[in-house]
Length: 357
Figure (spheres, rainbow, N blue to C red):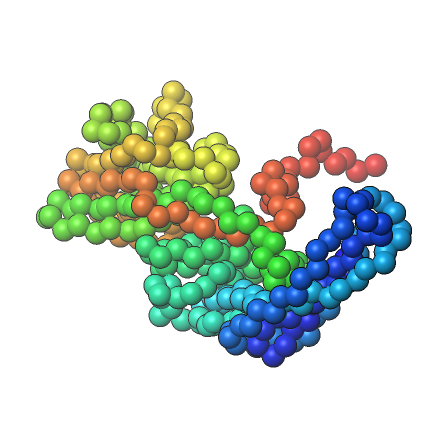
């Protein structure tokens, strides 16, 4: 079979010539049919051509029958939302470079470019949200998406980038893969943090990395009570406590001595910050349980922090409940990505020390 495909202004045309092998009764003769399927215009495109060849089924080279088969088909473009809210020169310069690259691609449609915080994902027909910045930009984006999460591909313009793992140069090279939809979307655990104040006020926050109670400006040791599914577990005495997702286990929790969790686990890790007891160690528990933090006495300056971005005072008698969110963080990964390779690159896991000779 010889085939080609090319793009008209609004639809893709595929042309195939199917050949039956020579000889009656060979069992590999092909019935020739002609098919023409019309399509309505959907998106602008430009010409693309490919050529494929298939040998006869019985391995012989002889061919004595060739009839064309025409097919007109429609392929929707990859619809992308570009988010570049950081107004720094680094991010905005990258946007000026990447935007024309995307618009030149024949099967990529740029639905919108968000450079402020007024972007809403509800009702958007988008296949991929491309976030320019670091991991913090991705945390803000998925929190703003709320109950209408979109697959996110992060282009790293920050410092570390566990989530925003693609450099601008790698992104440019990966554009053909994005066009061909050769990326997969991985679901990751998110949480809902509910802050019940002693005066009855309730605030709820959607998060991806962690919830932390921190001594902050109080400059004093905290006594934080932990309950899991209404069962009293222990009281942590120290500088604070972190309840982290697997994605957040490589963030603040890691700095406080917590373990690294595989990102696809459904679990929370509870990590004390500078505990005043050598027997206190991090705890890993299932994500289907409900976690509650409380402090009978909290000095002025104690702070509740969500994803390092939401900061609110925490007072005596307040309670914080952390539970699994009804939505998942959707992270788009390109072919060849490896979590352990990322750890090796980001954390400098070089194995043995590199001694100078």
